[in-house]
Amino acid sequence: MALNKNKDLKMFYSISEVAQMFKVTETLLRFWEKEFPNIKPQKAGRGIRQYTKADIEQVRLVYHLVKERGMTLQGARDMIKRDKGGGINRNVEVIERLKAIRTELQTIGKDLNGLV
Image 1 (cartoon, helix red, strand yellow):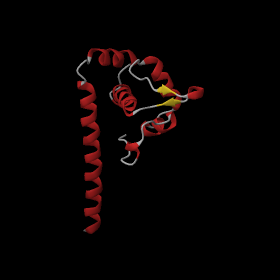
Image 2 (cartoon, helix red, strand yellow):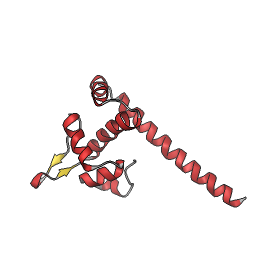
Image 3 (cartoon, rainbow, N blue to C red):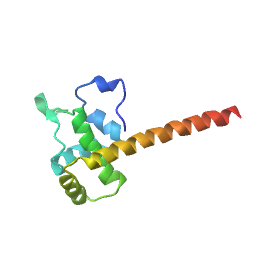
Image 4 (tube, one colour):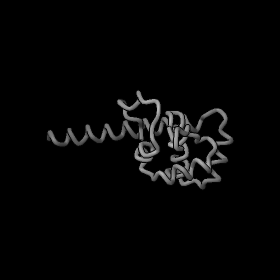
């Protein structure tokens, strides 16, 4: 779920791009906007949502708490509200980095197995 290095130059992402990043539906993202005040994408003409990197980090946080940790929406809201120092967000970033490292190591392992 890391941002693509080439896309990191973008200022705004569409709701469909964000949905693809997290493999969720656009409907779920719109629902989370209503349920979590920390997710506030800007709206351009005709109500088109424009997500910034900060918005995507908030979606990543909610995704982690609800989808990966299995928390209820209320539990996730409460945890985000209590987390004034941003510790949860840092933890999610570390988890994402560790997942990327694991994927890279698995790829290297497969490559090495192919040499044997």
